[in-house]
Length: 271
Image (tube, rainbow, N blue to C red):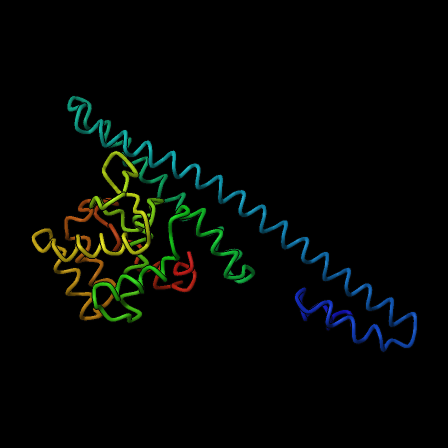
């Protein structure tokens, strides 16, 4: 009896125990029921502790991530001013980028450990630690953006846009692709000009405007691939070849993240 009640889970404990409790005919049955309740309660405490520990580690990794971003910006400035030691600055930047990528992978790994145990609302909390307060989940934003540019919401396009957002890995408000187009009321997120937008809709419209009006920067090819619901890697190559972030991630911008997202789309889409 205790095992059966345990398998029903915490949400049904009260309901599961009340009926049998009223119908119990002996102290033995009653003791068994109380033991079952204690086991379920302890399992909930253990899970909550585990989730709390992982969230704390996630917050620590996110702090590391922000520090690495800051170092990256400083090193980019050094590349333009320290011509004599350009090679050294490039080497330091590559080291920071390597640390940044490892930190991202560790964060996703932490979330993956709890993916099946966390409910949607708990994943949303993790997503806030991941992206900052001004955001919706990667998958939700992907669907909204595809509608904004009148592209099909096929799985290939969703994978591509989730991978693109993950590649940017920004905490800019309502701006998961790190657009630099200034809009009414928007503010600068960093020294490169990436914007914090005032709302989800403003961020979507800014990104749409940038891509639609950037044919000369290679953005037309991106929209064409999305319109044709092309293979995720094909669209990623178009993004990589454009001026959106040319040369980023050692030349592997977006294309390097397509296989990860494709293999575990449901997890990445909820972040």
